[in-house]
Image: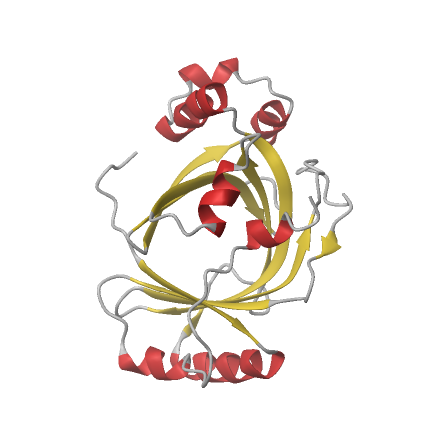
Length: 227
């Protein structure tokens, strides 16, 4: 795992349906479609980890300056490519580390059959093992949503529109595409903007929405609201 991985800037806004239509139109004119999207969008399913005292949830809600969270994720219910991810935040900047998992490995983690992780060649898998054992991390909830992504190469900018957010409650049957999920309260729509060293004016203008402020919205926190 690269300890010197670049941290990126990130904005999040909770927006309205009319805002979504406006940003979608502007970004379609100036940005590129994500080549992995189908008809401009894809489905994301994540399984988030936390400990019994909800450390990751509390650190997010309380706005801790340094925090991290682990999740497993795949797209469009395609289990041929599943990622273990660690998202880290420091001084308002974020970065992400990733490792590959097979469906069998994912199920073994869910079932707390984890001793194989000690010798896995991927450092992130071994780190998750250490934190399962040392911090009591375990799978807590499924988060599903639809994402519309746009790319703007100068500045390595990524703009996403996320909606139809659903929670698995305490269901962690991550590999079952038919597991029961329910909409989160308010049916929020989230605009995210991520970039490296500079945000080009053309993108700043495209995502500008009067009266919208940067928020600390967390899909994971929103999906724990029923707990």
